[in-house]
Length: 331
Image 1 (tube, rainbow, N blue to C red):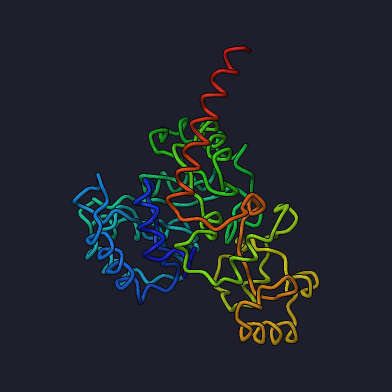
Image 2 (tube, rainbow, N blue to C red; image 1 turned 30 degrees about the horizontal axis):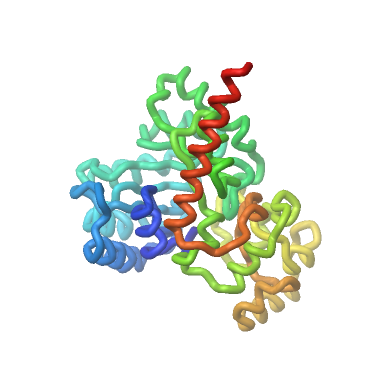
Protein backbone atom coordinates (compact mmCIF):
# COMPACT_ATOMS: atom_id res chain seq x y z
CA UNK A 1 0.00 0.00 0.00
CA UNK A 2 2.13 2.81 -1.36
CA UNK A 3 2.26 5.96 0.82
CA UNK A 4 0.14 4.26 3.51
CA UNK A 5 2.34 1.42 4.73
CA UNK A 6 5.32 3.41 5.96
CA UNK A 7 7.75 2.73 8.81
CA UNK A 8 5.28 2.89 11.76
CA UNK A 9 2.85 0.38 10.24
CA UNK A 10 5.56 -1.93 8.88
CA UNK A 11 7.37 -2.06 12.23
CA UNK A 12 4.09 -2.58 14.12
CA UNK A 13 3.22 -5.61 11.98
CA UNK A 14 6.67 -7.13 12.52
CA UNK A 15 6.49 -6.39 16.23
CA UNK A 16 3.14 -8.19 16.38
CA UNK A 17 4.63 -11.36 14.91
CA UNK A 18 4.23 -10.88 11.16
CA UNK A 19 6.47 -9.17 8.65
CA UNK A 20 5.50 -5.64 7.75
CA UNK A 21 6.46 -4.08 4.42
CA UNK A 22 7.16 -0.45 3.61
CA UNK A 23 5.27 0.31 0.40
CA UNK A 24 7.97 2.00 -1.65
CA UNK A 25 6.01 1.59 -4.87
CA UNK A 26 7.39 3.33 -7.96
CA UNK A 27 8.98 6.36 -6.29
CA UNK A 28 12.01 5.27 -4.27
CA UNK A 29 13.77 8.63 -3.89
CA UNK A 30 12.89 8.76 -0.16
CA UNK A 31 13.21 5.05 0.59
CA UNK A 32 16.37 5.50 2.66
CA UNK A 33 14.55 7.97 4.90
CA UNK A 34 11.74 5.48 5.53
CA UNK A 35 14.21 2.67 6.24
CA UNK A 36 16.15 4.96 8.58
CA UNK A 37 12.96 5.70 10.51
CA UNK A 38 12.15 1.98 10.74
CA UNK A 39 15.66 1.25 11.95
CA UNK A 40 15.36 3.93 14.63
CA UNK A 41 12.00 2.60 15.82
CA UNK A 42 13.46 -0.88 16.15
CA UNK A 43 16.60 0.37 17.87
CA UNK A 44 14.47 2.21 20.43
CA UNK A 45 12.39 -0.91 21.12
CA UNK A 46 14.01 -4.08 19.70
CA UNK A 47 11.77 -6.80 18.29
CA UNK A 48 12.13 -9.96 20.32
CA UNK A 49 13.53 -12.89 18.34
CA UNK A 50 14.44 -10.82 15.27
CA UNK A 51 17.57 -11.75 13.35
CA UNK A 52 20.55 -9.51 13.88
CA UNK A 53 21.62 -9.87 10.23
CA UNK A 54 18.63 -8.05 8.72
CA UNK A 55 16.23 -5.22 9.47
CA UNK A 56 13.07 -7.13 10.50
CA UNK A 57 10.73 -5.58 7.93
CA UNK A 58 10.34 -5.77 4.17
CA UNK A 59 10.14 -3.32 1.27
CA UNK A 60 7.67 -3.56 -1.61
CA UNK A 61 8.47 -2.31 -5.10
CA UNK A 62 6.24 -1.66 -8.12
CA UNK A 63 8.78 -2.66 -10.70
CA UNK A 64 7.49 -0.97 -13.83
CA UNK A 65 8.34 2.41 -12.34
CA UNK A 66 10.91 1.96 -9.54
CA UNK A 67 14.54 2.89 -10.18
CA UNK A 68 16.73 -0.17 -9.63
CA UNK A 69 19.93 1.71 -8.83
CA UNK A 70 18.35 3.92 -6.16
CA UNK A 71 16.46 0.98 -4.68
CA UNK A 72 19.55 -1.22 -4.55
CA UNK A 73 21.56 1.43 -2.76
CA UNK A 74 18.94 1.69 0.01
CA UNK A 75 18.55 -2.07 0.33
CA UNK A 76 22.32 -2.58 0.49
CA UNK A 77 22.61 -0.11 3.35
CA UNK A 78 19.72 -1.37 5.51
CA UNK A 79 19.35 -5.02 4.46
CA UNK A 80 15.66 -5.59 5.15
CA UNK A 81 14.47 -9.14 5.76
CA UNK A 82 12.64 -9.23 2.42
CA UNK A 83 11.94 -7.32 -0.78
CA UNK A 84 8.69 -7.74 -2.67
CA UNK A 85 8.42 -7.34 -6.46
CA UNK A 86 5.19 -6.64 -8.35
CA UNK A 87 4.01 -5.50 -11.77
CA UNK A 88 7.03 -5.51 -14.07
CA UNK A 89 6.32 -4.93 -17.74
CA UNK A 90 7.77 -8.41 -18.33
CA UNK A 91 8.60 -11.15 -15.86
CA UNK A 92 12.08 -11.26 -17.36
CA UNK A 93 12.67 -7.76 -15.94
CA UNK A 94 12.67 -9.28 -12.45
CA UNK A 95 15.81 -11.30 -13.13
CA UNK A 96 17.95 -8.16 -12.91
CA UNK A 97 16.14 -7.00 -9.79
CA UNK A 98 16.56 -10.37 -8.11
CA UNK A 99 20.26 -10.58 -8.91
CA UNK A 100 20.90 -7.00 -7.80
CA UNK A 101 19.17 -7.44 -4.44
CA UNK A 102 20.82 -10.76 -3.70
CA UNK A 103 24.26 -9.38 -4.50
CA UNK A 104 23.67 -6.18 -2.53
CA UNK A 105 22.69 -8.06 0.63
CA UNK A 106 24.90 -11.15 0.32
CA UNK A 107 21.63 -13.11 -0.09
CA UNK A 108 20.38 -12.39 3.43
CA UNK A 109 17.34 -10.52 2.07
CA UNK A 110 14.56 -12.83 0.86
CA UNK A 111 12.92 -12.29 -2.52
CA UNK A 112 9.11 -12.23 -2.64
CA UNK A 113 7.38 -12.01 -6.03
CA UNK A 114 3.68 -11.30 -6.46
CA UNK A 115 1.74 -12.76 -9.38
CA UNK A 116 -1.88 -13.54 -10.16
CA UNK A 117 -1.86 -16.54 -12.50
CA UNK A 118 -0.52 -20.09 -12.49
CA UNK A 119 1.47 -19.33 -15.64
CA UNK A 120 3.21 -16.33 -14.07
CA UNK A 121 3.97 -18.30 -10.90
CA UNK A 122 5.71 -20.98 -12.94
CA UNK A 123 7.60 -18.40 -14.97
CA UNK A 124 8.96 -16.41 -12.02
CA UNK A 125 9.86 -19.66 -10.28
CA UNK A 126 12.00 -20.67 -13.25
CA UNK A 127 13.48 -17.21 -13.85
CA UNK A 128 14.14 -15.97 -10.32
CA UNK A 129 13.85 -18.85 -7.85
CA UNK A 130 12.14 -16.57 -5.30
CA UNK A 131 11.99 -17.37 -1.60
CA UNK A 132 8.22 -16.70 -1.56
CA UNK A 133 5.58 -16.39 -4.28
CA UNK A 134 2.64 -14.17 -3.38
CA UNK A 135 -0.52 -15.34 -5.15
CA UNK A 136 -2.92 -12.45 -5.54
CA UNK A 137 -6.55 -13.39 -6.10
CA UNK A 138 -9.14 -11.27 -7.86
CA UNK A 139 -10.66 -9.97 -4.59
CA UNK A 140 -7.54 -7.93 -3.82
CA UNK A 141 -7.76 -4.19 -3.35
CA UNK A 142 -5.50 -1.80 -5.18
CA UNK A 143 -3.72 -3.02 -8.27
CA UNK A 144 -4.02 -6.48 -9.71
CA UNK A 145 -4.92 -8.36 -12.87
CA UNK A 146 -8.11 -7.23 -14.57
CA UNK A 147 -8.80 -10.89 -15.38
CA UNK A 148 -7.96 -13.53 -12.84
CA UNK A 149 -9.19 -16.18 -10.45
CA UNK A 150 -10.16 -16.00 -6.81
CA UNK A 151 -7.97 -17.69 -4.23
CA UNK A 152 -10.25 -20.70 -3.77
CA UNK A 153 -9.13 -22.09 -7.14
CA UNK A 154 -5.93 -20.14 -7.72
CA UNK A 155 -4.04 -21.37 -4.65
CA UNK A 156 -4.46 -25.15 -5.05
CA UNK A 157 -3.93 -25.07 -8.81
CA UNK A 158 -0.75 -23.06 -8.40
CA UNK A 159 0.52 -25.33 -5.63
CA UNK A 160 -0.08 -28.40 -7.81
CA UNK A 161 1.59 -26.83 -10.85
CA UNK A 162 4.66 -25.72 -8.90
CA UNK A 163 5.01 -29.15 -7.32
CA UNK A 164 4.77 -30.86 -10.71
CA UNK A 165 7.43 -28.53 -12.14
CA UNK A 166 9.87 -29.17 -9.30
CA UNK A 167 9.20 -25.91 -7.43
CA UNK A 168 7.02 -27.29 -4.66
CA UNK A 169 9.54 -26.07 -2.08
CA UNK A 170 8.65 -22.41 -2.74
CA UNK A 171 6.06 -21.31 -0.15
CA UNK A 172 2.94 -19.50 -1.29
CA UNK A 173 1.53 -16.44 0.47
CA UNK A 174 -2.13 -15.74 -0.28
CA UNK A 175 -3.35 -12.20 -1.00
CA UNK A 176 -6.74 -10.81 -1.88
CA UNK A 177 -9.86 -10.41 0.23
CA UNK A 178 -8.33 -11.62 3.50
CA UNK A 179 -9.18 -9.37 6.42
CA UNK A 180 -9.82 -11.70 9.37
CA UNK A 181 -9.22 -15.18 10.77
CA UNK A 182 -11.76 -17.09 8.70
CA UNK A 183 -10.07 -16.00 5.48
CA UNK A 184 -6.66 -16.89 6.87
CA UNK A 185 -7.81 -20.37 7.92
CA UNK A 186 -9.35 -20.96 4.49
CA UNK A 187 -6.13 -20.00 2.71
CA UNK A 188 -4.06 -22.30 4.91
CA UNK A 189 -6.43 -25.14 4.00
CA UNK A 190 -6.01 -24.28 0.31
CA UNK A 191 -2.23 -24.64 0.45
CA UNK A 192 -0.88 -21.26 1.51
CA UNK A 193 2.05 -21.10 3.92
CA UNK A 194 0.97 -17.64 5.03
CA UNK A 195 -1.27 -14.74 4.09
CA UNK A 196 -1.03 -11.08 3.17
CA UNK A 197 -3.46 -8.48 4.49
CA UNK A 198 -3.60 -5.00 3.05
CA UNK A 199 -7.13 -3.61 3.21
CA UNK A 200 -7.53 -4.58 6.89
CA UNK A 201 -4.58 -2.41 7.85
CA UNK A 202 -6.13 0.64 6.19
CA UNK A 203 -8.23 0.66 9.35
CA UNK A 204 -5.30 0.45 11.73
CA UNK A 205 -4.07 3.14 14.09
CA UNK A 206 -0.59 3.03 12.56
CA UNK A 207 -1.59 3.53 8.92
CA UNK A 208 -0.52 6.77 7.24
CA UNK A 209 -3.97 7.43 5.81
CA UNK A 210 -6.36 10.36 5.54
CA UNK A 211 -9.31 10.14 7.92
CA UNK A 212 -11.71 10.57 5.01
CA UNK A 213 -10.20 7.55 3.24
CA UNK A 214 -10.33 5.51 6.45
CA UNK A 215 -13.95 6.50 7.02
CA UNK A 216 -14.80 5.37 3.48
CA UNK A 217 -13.32 1.96 4.26
CA UNK A 218 -15.38 1.65 7.45
CA UNK A 219 -18.53 2.77 5.63
CA UNK A 220 -18.28 0.33 2.71
CA UNK A 221 -20.32 -2.90 2.82
CA UNK A 222 -20.94 -5.79 0.44
CA UNK A 223 -17.48 -5.43 -1.05
CA UNK A 224 -18.17 -7.50 -4.16
CA UNK A 225 -20.49 -4.79 -5.48
CA UNK A 226 -19.28 -1.71 -3.61
CA UNK A 227 -15.77 -2.01 -5.09
CA UNK A 228 -14.68 -2.33 -8.70
CA UNK A 229 -11.46 -2.98 -10.60
CA UNK A 230 -10.91 -0.30 -13.22
CA UNK A 231 -8.37 1.97 -14.89
CA UNK A 232 -10.54 5.02 -14.14
CA UNK A 233 -8.86 5.80 -10.82
CA UNK A 234 -5.37 5.63 -12.32
CA UNK A 235 -6.35 7.98 -15.13
CA UNK A 236 -7.76 10.49 -12.67
CA UNK A 237 -4.70 10.25 -10.41
CA UNK A 238 -2.25 10.43 -13.31
CA UNK A 239 -0.61 7.06 -12.54
CA UNK A 240 -0.81 5.70 -16.07
CA UNK A 241 2.37 3.65 -16.39
CA UNK A 242 0.85 0.37 -15.27
CA UNK A 243 1.03 -2.71 -17.53
CA UNK A 244 -2.07 -2.97 -19.69
CA UNK A 245 -3.48 -6.05 -17.99
CA UNK A 246 -3.52 -4.43 -14.53
CA UNK A 247 -6.25 -2.28 -13.01
CA UNK A 248 -6.97 -0.89 -9.56
CA UNK A 249 -9.83 -2.07 -7.29
CA UNK A 250 -11.36 0.73 -5.26
CA UNK A 251 -14.62 1.72 -3.60
CA UNK A 252 -17.13 2.90 -6.20
CA UNK A 253 -17.51 6.67 -6.06
CA UNK A 254 -18.90 9.52 -8.11
CA UNK A 255 -15.76 9.72 -10.25
CA UNK A 256 -16.26 6.13 -11.37
CA UNK A 257 -19.98 6.59 -11.94
CA UNK A 258 -19.31 9.62 -14.12
CA UNK A 259 -16.81 7.71 -16.27
CA UNK A 260 -19.16 6.13 -18.77
CA UNK A 261 -17.72 2.87 -20.12
CA UNK A 262 -14.43 3.72 -18.44
CA UNK A 263 -13.97 6.95 -20.41
CA UNK A 264 -12.74 9.86 -18.28
CA UNK A 265 -13.79 13.31 -19.50
CA UNK A 266 -11.98 16.58 -18.87
CA UNK A 267 -14.91 17.62 -16.68
CA UNK A 268 -14.40 14.53 -14.53
CA UNK A 269 -10.70 15.35 -14.20
CA UNK A 270 -11.49 18.92 -13.16
CA UNK A 271 -13.98 17.71 -10.55
CA UNK A 272 -11.40 15.26 -9.20
CA UNK A 273 -8.81 18.03 -8.93
CA UNK A 274 -11.32 20.16 -7.01
CA UNK A 275 -12.04 17.25 -4.66
CA UNK A 276 -8.35 17.06 -3.82
CA UNK A 277 -8.71 20.53 -2.31
CA UNK A 278 -11.57 19.42 -0.03
CA UNK A 279 -9.51 17.28 2.33
CA UNK A 280 -11.44 14.49 4.03
CA UNK A 281 -14.67 15.60 2.38
CA UNK A 282 -13.26 14.33 -0.89
CA UNK A 283 -14.00 10.80 0.37
CA UNK A 284 -17.54 11.56 1.61
CA UNK A 285 -20.48 9.41 0.48
CA UNK A 286 -20.84 11.56 -2.64
CA UNK A 287 -17.08 12.07 -2.88
CA UNK A 288 -14.76 11.64 -5.83
CA UNK A 289 -11.36 10.67 -4.39
CA UNK A 290 -9.91 7.20 -4.88
CA UNK A 291 -10.17 4.76 -1.97
CA UNK A 292 -8.42 1.56 -2.99
CA UNK A 293 -9.81 -1.43 -1.07
CA UNK A 294 -10.50 -5.13 -1.59
CA UNK A 295 -13.79 -7.00 -1.51
CA UNK A 296 -13.25 -7.90 2.14
CA UNK A 297 -13.87 -4.29 3.09
CA UNK A 298 -17.37 -5.07 4.34
CA UNK A 299 -15.89 -7.18 7.15
CA UNK A 300 -14.09 -4.18 8.65
CA UNK A 301 -15.98 -2.11 11.20
CA UNK A 302 -13.42 -0.50 13.53
CA UNK A 303 -10.02 1.15 13.54
CA UNK A 304 -7.73 -0.85 15.83
CA UNK A 305 -4.03 -1.01 16.67
CA UNK A 306 -2.05 -3.50 14.61
CA UNK A 307 -1.25 -5.67 17.66
CA UNK A 308 -4.95 -6.07 18.42
CA UNK A 309 -5.77 -6.94 14.81
CA UNK A 310 -3.03 -9.56 14.71
CA UNK A 311 -4.08 -11.10 18.04
CA UNK A 312 -7.69 -11.36 16.89
CA UNK A 313 -6.70 -13.01 13.62
CA UNK A 314 -4.44 -15.55 15.28
CA UNK A 315 -7.03 -16.40 17.91
CA UNK A 316 -9.75 -16.90 15.29
CA UNK A 317 -7.48 -19.10 13.14
CA UNK A 318 -6.62 -21.32 16.09
CA UNK A 319 -10.29 -21.67 17.01
CA UNK A 320 -11.35 -22.47 13.44
CA UNK A 321 -8.58 -25.01 12.86
CA UNK A 322 -9.50 -26.77 16.10
CA UNK A 323 -13.19 -26.77 15.16
CA UNK A 324 -12.53 -28.02 11.62
CA UNK A 325 -10.28 -30.79 12.93
CA UNK A 326 -13.02 -31.90 15.29
CA UNK A 327 -15.69 -31.80 12.58
CA UNK A 328 -13.46 -33.63 10.08
CA UNK A 329 -13.27 -36.63 12.36
CA UNK A 330 -17.04 -37.05 11.91
CA UNK A 331 -16.86 -37.50 8.13
